[in-house]
Amino acid sequence: MKTITVNASKAYDILIGESILDTAGSAVRKAAGGQSAAIVTDDIVAELYGYRLHRTLAENGYRVASRVIPNGESSKNDENFISLLNFLADEKLTRADVVVALGGGVVGDIAGFAASCYMRGIHFAQIPTTLLSAVDSSVGGKTAINLPLGKNLAGAFYQPDIVVCDVSLLSTLTPEVFRDGCAEVIKHGVIADKAFFHSLEAPIKTQLIGVIARSVTIKRDIVALDEFEKSERKLLNFGHTLGHAIELLSDYRVPHGHAVAIGMAIESRAAFRLGICHDECPRDILRMLRQYGLPENTHFGAEELAEACLSDKKRDGGLLTMVFPAEIGRCILKDIPVCELENIVRMGLGDL
Image (cartoon, rainbow, N blue to C red; front, side):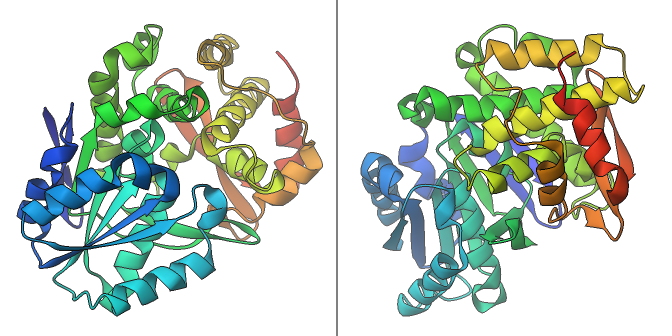
């Protein structure tokens, strides 16, 4: 098992290993304490792993309650958020108790946001069950729900007390859901580690623990420099500004990782046409996306994509911060005037 320590406003460990779900209760007890544990999960994950988590928490002295939400991005809404807060109150959790998120990014985001707000903050543990949540959303402290005008528009920075990543849980993922996580892994290589990027030429499934550990370490190091996303942490948004726009326009029928893949492709092609990088850079990125069966194009046009981007959290008045690759392993942040955004998106839509 690998242990990676995050030093943010709250220091915590990320445990990565095989078949460690059944001892997760001990890790939660050590990190968070408390008398009651509220599991938040979705209807698919509950059937697969809910009983095992309930058992290990109970074995470690917790009174356990569970809340199950429907699977899918549409569940990350204000109605479920308020319902979750009322559930925590009904179960009489105190500030000393712990919310345990068992699931992918949707579960982790809404459970973490609820933990940050209930009684102004109670303990929180993440147990990711997808590659996407293992390498991205379970680490770094971003929690949120979606609003009708955009993704993650209501939320809080709230670090967990512990992250327990059991890679054996990823064996039940569908190929499409697994590919979602591959997009975020590729992103980490592009923004910070050329050697790691090229190591992905070998299948991710054959090197899961190492890939997750390196992705988490890259994110950890960036978060340590800029926990609240004032500067360097924005690099983690490579592909996300346009990716979130695609998710919104598709009514979330395009899943997050696939949308981010398209966003990375658009931003990479635009970077070349803006003179930020040589054509080899976007070609390498596109080749890697294709290797993992990820999309690189969308039927949405430049005008509607640019309009949807205006709801992005990274917008500051008349400017929107975008991430462009300068080379594999290094990206730059560039403030784009909103009036120029449509043209830049159009640059990225055309094939090389």
